[in-house]
Image (cartoon, rainbow, N blue to C red):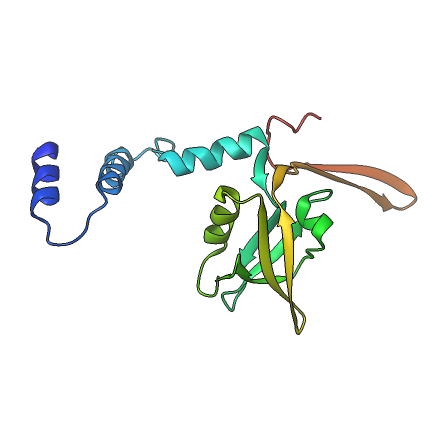
Length: 174
């Protein structure tokens, strides 16, 4: 039944189809019909993202970005000792262009995917900081994703050490 439907769609559909996406969605649908929230399917991209998190390292510029309420890509964290920090990227910088390509209307995931998969060793960002636009060139490097943060909290002349582990990755121990 499944193969017949797949063949009918791929042979007779009037528009363009991504056959891999059809299969991925079919598998996803089958697994979600189990009713078990822990039974899931990961395509190659999702698996690679997961492995990147578990390994704790990736090739990139060393910052986290997110979309703000107006749809701009904004730097929300700059990793200590990372390439972005060395190049002068700051939190709240708005990323307008990457390698001359306008990123208005694109998502932070699009930006991240482009930077991580770029064949170029250097990436040129056009950023907006307050009312000024500037171009910053950053050399992509192996970046460790911070998984542990800590601080000392002082309360009533007593000190408490607070440690937050955001994910258990291969580098969390160190």
